[in-house]
Image (cartoon, rainbow, N blue to C red):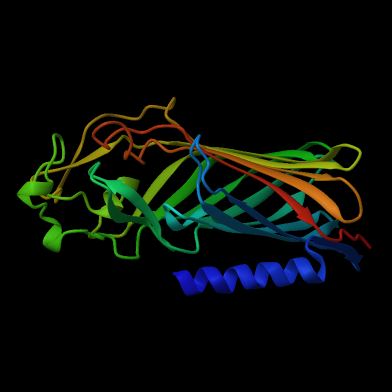
Length: 340
């Protein structure tokens, strides 16, 4: 991991040396295509600081957004968008940890039968690049893997109505959306042999067995995938709100037609339905990216994400309740922004 950090840092520093933030946008034929790439680096440190502070910290983060949209001709259009984020921090006390990790790809072929209304199939895939950890497992400072590539991974297929409300703002509504949740990379991922927690490590509420990783995302570890049918709404906003300030946002809402299932038994090997359909239980995935261009060489970016998934029940004192999840990244980058 330390070699990965040094390699990643070197790539980012090289990016800064050559021109840290670049954006290209072009229209060729009937396609509008563009790329937005940004890199940010931050460092802090202290020595003999009476109030207390990290002796050393260094963080690096990179963002890449690629899009290719087919301009409507004879009713047919096709929008594609790929967002990749990754960030790591190295501190004197905590070592190397990731602070940002995102893979988000959307493709939307459609057919417009009016100026602002059409029908489309929205396909969205989300996951992350690298392992994520709970660094205070069982409240004992233990380290346990809680995520990885395709653990979880989300695939949503949403055929429905595509409404372009106004320039820069659109919405896709689907009454028959299909959501697939995958945990295919070490679906059990135990910290202790066989998932049996030693007596010395057991705490109130932990029990004798570890909960398999897949269960944290509502997935049966023996199947590694869960399918849900429901209704969805996806809202897009992408516009320069004021001069040199661009705001890109996406809000995904999904309500499953099925009820919740519970994993139980001494080793969580059994399942049962515990309630019926509740339309008010809406899964939320809300992402925001704001880029403020200070001048030709300097920009400030702020990313803010909110997630709520009723099946992700790994919060609270006993790690068994759902909760709103928040993540934000603020960065300053020096480089070049170009459009053509």
